[in-house]
Amino acid sequence: MNTNSANQNNENQFKRTMKTRHLIMLSLGGVIGTGLFFNTGYIIATAGAVGTIIAYLIGALVVYLVMLCLGELAVAMPETGAFHTYATRFISPGTGYTVAWLYWLTWTVALGSSLIAASLCAQYWFPWIPVWVWCLIFCAMIFGLNIFTTAFFAESEFWFSIIKVITIIIFIIAGCGAIFGFIPMKYDMPAPFLHNITASGWFPNGITPIIMTMVSVNFAFSGTELIGIAAGEAQNPEKTIPLAIKATILRLIIFFIGTIFVLAALLPMDQAGVIRSPFVMVFDNIGVPYAADFFNYVILTAILSAANSGLYASGRMLWSLSNQGTLPKCFGKLTKQGVPAIAISISMLGGLLALFTCVIAPDTVFVALTAISGFAVVAVWLSICVSHYFFRQQLTTTQLSTLKYKAPWYPLVSILGIILCSVACIGLAFDPEQRIALYCGIPFVAVCYIAHYFTQVFKKRDSTNENR
Image (cartoon, rainbow, N blue to C red):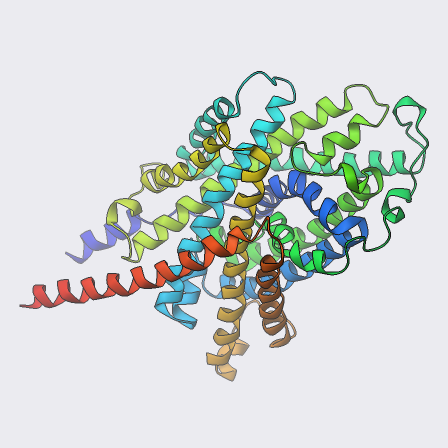
């Protein structure tokens, strides 16, 4: 009896096939996507050039704090789909259940926004083909990449992410060349230098837009926490996770801040938006033949890569809920290749949200979806910081000394992370275009807590009936 149980548990556990390079590129793959390539245009148009740079610097600080907290938790307790298990242990079971669904919501909705962005990229070349057609094509592609083995997924995402990283480096170098006149602009336009950054003043719309756009910035940074999701599939997690976190944060700061500086310098504030990628708009103005087409292709690849990571994350979260008994057992079943096929299939339904763009304006839907996804991920980050705070509170001096990885500056790291995540959520209330995230997010959280309560009631009834 015990042997069968053990075999069943082994069958429902993921294989540890991910190496450090896979974790780094999985995290970068999740981050360098829709938020950076499309949402940045919305942030520049709202907060201005300097405001956008400041917003991203604050966003980088938030990510750094959250990752330090997550690193300690993930090394101490490496589990697949780990966020909600930490919240369950150190906050409350209801919070853990809610965090799991919030993170599922994050990536399921982000999958929809990624498909919209990818379709807008495709329309750059084929404007006569409807958005929903591209959405269906990309849905099938992403589903196919996830339904094979984890090793296949990790390797494909590794190479996808390398393409994105190389592209970002080329963009920063070429952009700086155009800013300072080493690369000519189209139509003999003079080199802009820092004119676009200072043209509208330091804060053209005041300080408030910086707070308003914090969730959009955090949405752009979402994906770094995938290291925690994949902890249960990592080889030697006590070594690979800290290395992956340090490497990811360093690259993010360089890539994001460098990219935002180039975009802000080359893209006037009144031309920014989300209908076209600001990257493509920038290279439309640079006198390098086919540069815009090249970057549009790479951005399309990058966004599909981020969607690939998102489906991975949402599928693992449903598996984790099932594995803990809060969802039907069918969600926890793994194929012979170690893939939660049913969980991935259900999560893929979220990508079909993008099909609504065939009847609703893509830019309106895009901003709404990214706001909802951003709210959900910030709420998850908040739970990570709170879980870390209470985790440390419960440790004895002896237990603390045995930790293989410790977040520095405790409790400042946890408390500052909690404050900044809370401020980002409050900022949504000041932006009419993103306020829908609160209208959807707060009721969603309430429904999750209520659902958890009734789930526990039914469990108690079933166990009572079995005892009888």
